[in-house]
Image 1 (tube, rainbow, N blue to C red):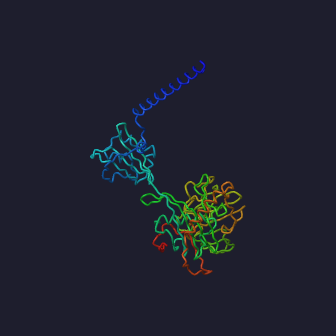
Image 2: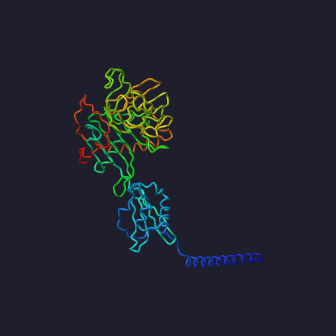
Image 3: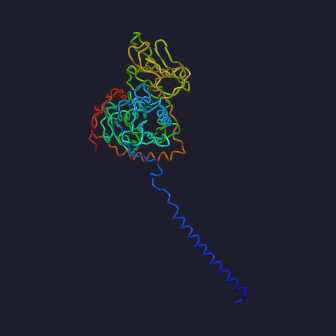
Length: 456
């Protein structure tokens, strides 16, 4: 071997020895670090505030906010001084102004005699509770969210005399009185542009509903929305499917993605018609025949009147035989009038914009009226039109870019609807057996009126 090759082999061997020594040195260093540095905290409770066990004092009558009362009075009754009251109310103000708390809100206080932490518990609303705690560093807060679970409810019904007395099937045992009342009103609202609930329903009409709910642990419902609705009346079936849209909670569309929402509601109050649009009607006050260029709804005094479409208030006040009236101006030369009102909403005045469904007044009998009712008129380019038959434009359909997503959710919802069976027993259908149906006045609702149906 030449001297040159021998030197190269010796250099390579020296490099290998150096690498081995360096690797051993690095390994010893890393091992020493691992033995001296504690492992990171990975327990979930280390990442979230922990509330120590506490003994709550027995509630007192003074712990509940009374009408005209103040939070400071409640705290003072529990022995808190002025500085403590200031600091506690400052913590509450991070979430809600103490002055805006409604009467009936209750506070809970820890039992100081038990020697535990000084804590106050305040439930702002059913979904969140504030815990206000005193520590060495001062007062701190922790928000506890009320847990909920998702569930799906499927119900079907056959109309007998009204939506309220429909014979039901499905998950009826999971509804409370108030929830079913709200459900009926919501169903009527979805189809308000397609079905006139004051005159269109017949005995034997059916509906099927699938809805999703967020239910709290105590059984109360946090929120709900329809997944699908099917309503069959006069042999025609309407279906509705929700779609979340920017700026509003949900809008409803038919199976092809066309909007079910019209530019105008068919009626401003959900009550029966007492006098229709006609060119000749005997006026009960004037005692003579003349044209009746509107629709009268026999609603009770004080019932809320809703704007049938968004628009600008053209006039609001007294107008002769109309009594108290609100007139709204809408696009395309359309105006609507709401007459014989008992009162007009305080925020409704000329020039103000009102939204569709906004309460603009209360039913009364002002002007030439023989009793409480609402007189409703629809004018187009200055000409009176029959509100029940005039062609009403619809809102925009689903955008083409969102149709694929809509069809996917629609197909899933249709599968859910198919699980809702319609009761086979139906009343005999008579051609002249029209049911003058409208959602019943809320104060008259009683779940006892609904026949209980054994769930299949």
